[in-house]
Length: 98
Image 1 (cartoon, rainbow, N blue to C red):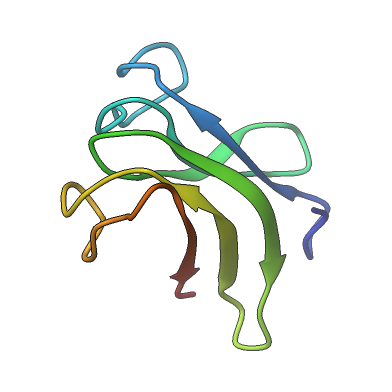
Image 2 (image 1 turned 60 degrees about the vertical axis):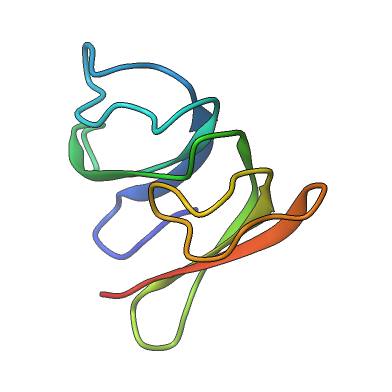
């Protein structure tokens, strides 16, 4: 998703530990991995969001207040960033504030 200033926001999932350009380990299984690149492809910030099982990011959109809305699914219980347990894999919506 392009952003002001020529950079972009990229969202995916990752189950990697801290390595290379990844600065946060996954909580367990796959987690949402969100990062912003500047116009030269350098990582400005990143965030790994999830719980002890698998989370799969479906889409990301910018909100009117400058934050981001992440939509996907989760199989995790109350662990990591999850505040409610999943029941057989649920949709999971996360709001990142500016």
